[in-house]
Amino acid sequence: MTDTPDKPDETDERADDKTPSRRKRRGTGPISTEEARLLATARPVKAVAPAKGPTPATPRFGRYERPDFERVETMLAAFANRRLGPLVNLVAKGYYGAATDEEKQNPGIRTAFYSFFLYGYRDPKGIRPVDLFAESGLPLEGRQRAALDACLQARLVVMSIDDVHVGKHRMRGRDLLRDEPVTAFDRNASTLIKPGERLMCWQIPWGTSWQPIGYAVQVEQHKAIALERSIETLCNGLRAVRRELPEQHAANLWWLVHRVANM
Image (tube, rainbow, N blue to C red; front, side, top):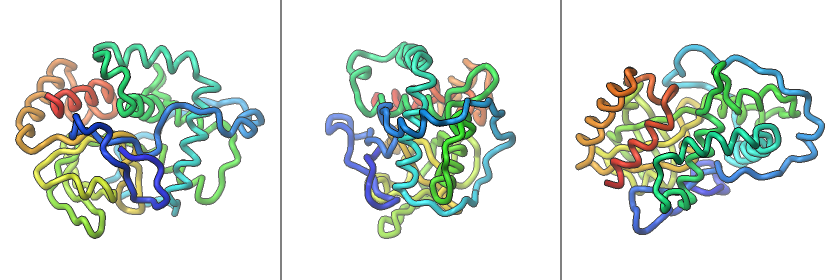
């Protein structure tokens, strides 16, 4: 959705003038090798079970700023490259299985894949790369620790937009799959999205609200009914309830919304 802005609520320009429903990354990006010194001295990874129970609608976390999140996510990406490199390629092969050649080259969709891999992919025991990173022994303290705690609560949201306050960069609406109210803050998205539209993105806690990260997909209002029917079809095909889609079938959900937004 956006690149890494100086302020915590900024976003970037649209990813492609020809696909106005897409917007670029906010932090999550291609895996790098930064923090090599820290990673080299990290303690061996210890698996940890993911947190149980639904994420609260109004979470409260320690204070962190946008640069803290970006720093932590860069370290997380480096960790994934170092420890999980072969798995990244294996998961990517499945993620792009039905993608077109153009989609495979799209940098925004590549960003969306990394968001899925870091925060949504789970091994057979239900453990994500971000869970492994949290137990890797890196010396994170203060605001960076608060940013990591927020990353551990990252979730994929399909949000129905009810109200937008451009001056406050605030969007209010409802999580269509968890059936709960959502307030999100984002400078660029609040100038682009309109009431009645849908917005799909990964979000992390921001005080008592949420902050979009990664690459977002905007669905215009006249496609809302088509999206609703497509979600029902996906649930029937997977034999899943709506609430299970973002946690257990995030990749399927992402591609479905992407297809509807660009049909």
